[in-house]
Image (tube, rainbow, N blue to C red):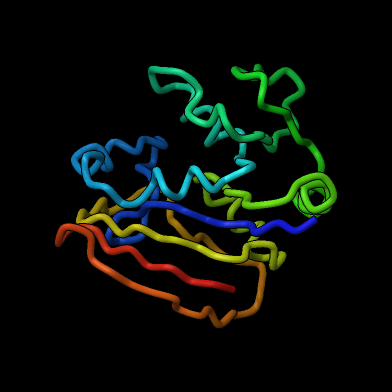
Length: 175
């Protein structure tokens, strides 16, 4: 089987994915701008996220946003309540998750939000591509898109960069 592991994430112009309290309210003014999310998500077979991202998503009003994808929540919390039948909790290392995904799935995997898990995938050379959407706002502080890495500098290949409605900058990299 063959999988492609992707990152797809929004950040402020100064490099934060959320405020210090985890809030992503800074994205609200831009939610009516089409950044290609619908095309992106229809090609995703599996979503993977950490516990913190899962908790943020489940705090929003509405139904589980990924009902058509198999979901893995990476967490050691054995009491974590799963809100949808498509979800499973994963408590082993990311390398073991990647091996499991390669063995049981074919297609595209999205590492949803969060810097800890996404960076673990980057550090271990698991991420194949990364789409970053830079919002025209400065937060000044918060949760950084890229906290410290436990790896050597790595050259990325820029696939494209474009401006969406003269506001959002979309950048795509491959590893």
